Length: 532
Image (cartoon, rainbow, N blue to C red; front, top):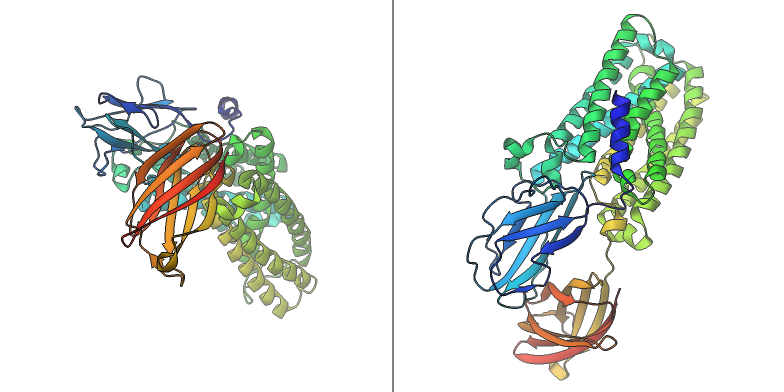
């Protein structure tokens, strides 16, 4: 029955290329309305989940003008509607939204429209993640992933390499702790996943919005994984009481069932080739589990402290050393493939949170592999007591490093891939003014794609000190398409133009003119850049 449910969920997941995307909005981005609207409606490319304040509408003073929580009209989970206050005055309004995609990850954005006037350029705004909710979600990911990895790896170790370990109370403690950790983590993800993805706050944990997050594919797969783990634990306990160790076939079958739910519910299941990337992720997860789960069992149950009347099985350590070396090799290869798919480009490797987390994970992993390589050299001399003590310390250090890797992995699972979040930017420096009033303007435009872009302009004097910008105007022209000139004032904040939205409606090369007031003096400057 569970297998049929899983197959149904996998077939429904579809070959999604990315997270949910905003396909249309009413009022539209940049629209000028003659009368106040009653509603704001957002249409997404797939089903999304919302909580209170998932969508807010703000006037040009930053005051909230929506009058009710967002909701799905009828049974259409791809549309979200929020009601506005009646008789809104003329002005610019911003719609700021954050929803939970079908894969369980948050998607956010903002846009502007005007009532009676053209919408003015405004500072770009995105919803932030509540610290408590974000921390609980990361903790859930960490417990679910680390518990699953140790549980599977320890089971592999006992069934394949150390069948005598089934009688070790230390080994049982490792298995029991890992099972409890992954069950708690998955339960926590069910409870806070929807609130985290839709941008809810800690107060939503005690509201009806805290209902289990089973409205998305990721949530349903988490529920299936939780059920499989509970049934597998009961089955293992029953076999253990009867004196029968689960067969290798049993362990592999259960592992694949759980690992597939882990892969398909995350980033690998939402690429342009979900079957291939999910397969790579299952292989990667298997290698990680074999390595880290084995390490946990070694440091707790096999390499006991001296004086406990336990002889270290040298043959077992040699076999484990070979298995671990192979697992690390597979881990590195499959991890490189997954990172390549997730990051997408060299620029995204350093230009996105996801890419920087990948770099951190690689750095820690290299240190752990170096420790592991030294440990392998000691295995041949493990019969000496001083060598056993050193080996135990090294394995403990290796395990500690692996825990850090798992922590970074949990953060990666909760972070949108770099291929989706990376946006190209343009930075340049131009001179403006003359004589004592000469300044250098440091300009950044991000992203360089059609639509609203964020413009940042900072001024410095010849000696590098900041020069405050009191007022600014921008002029946009696209000669190739015959667009413009479009000229309007832009807001300044703390002496600079900071991530202010400018409207660039078409691709091509754009000429930009800046007119700035600096300490009472007006200066002009210009630059051009390509919009893709």
